[in-house]
Image (cartoon, rainbow, N blue to C red):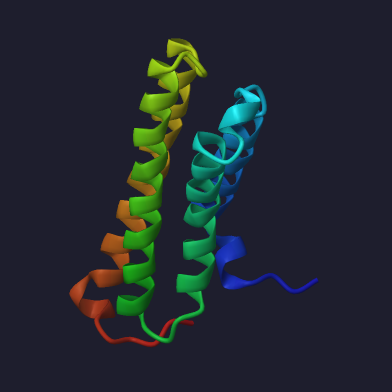
Length: 128
């Protein structure tokens, strides 16, 4: 079976797991939040892995790094929205802490991959 470049990346797998967790947590949100915070959290969480995948298809490491920045931004959206969900008592403090710890791990992985792509020896090199 063919495996795409992004499917070989640990950070992509971690982002998929994170999105799964966000979907699970938001299932218990109030029905009137279905088109509000539930939708926002889910879309931002899905955007993380989607941008990793899309960026991996680019022809240069610089382009890929830009998509990793976008993925990082989506991750920060989730962190912010989780804070709101916690204040609204849709998410417990414990779950918020767990999700923030996982977000921190994903953030570090995204930053590490981005840094490795932008090292001088990689500048302008086509993505394989």
